[in-house]
View 1 (cartoon, helix red, strand yellow):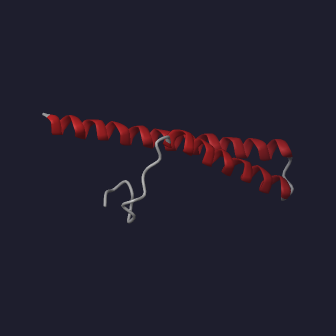
View 2 (cartoon, rainbow, N blue to C red):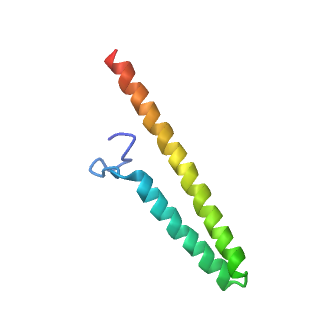
Length: 81
């Protein structure tokens, strides 16, 4: 078991985590738009809310993934010294 796959050692990390995050948060953004519009908000306000939420969530996730990649590179560098 490693820190990357939780309790299931056979589960692999995605080979394209940046793309997967963008797709997942885009889908959630669309869900926010639909729910907000269905509950009476204007379409423009719903769209802006969903788009902003998706962009912020995707940006945060990409930043965290980049930090993880940098840490892994540093660890690999330290081990090779």
